[in-house]
Image (tube, rainbow, N blue to C red; front, side, top):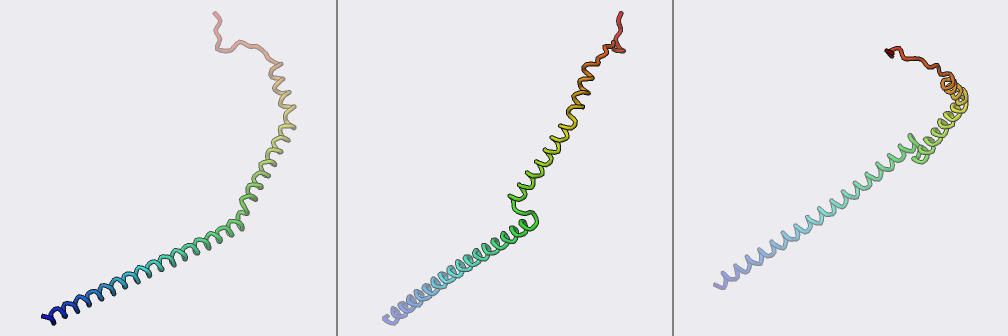
Length: 117
């Protein structure tokens, strides 16, 4: 009976050892997964930064800076407004005179569809 108890004790000890090894293996696997996830996150962040830098270079090369584009648009608008002002100034007097001619030279007429009975 003592050998049976001793055999059971050995089996329990072996089972405990196996459970510890399985638990340790699970911990190692979890650490490896976490490490792989961290490395992947770091690599993704590096890739994102590289692509963002490349985009900014492309944008600066082809479009200039946003401030530069805004300044160019403002300058274009100012030029167009100045052109419009010049056109108004050169055509204003003749236009006003023409309008006044229409106002002063009214010739009242009866409409052709008017039937006076």
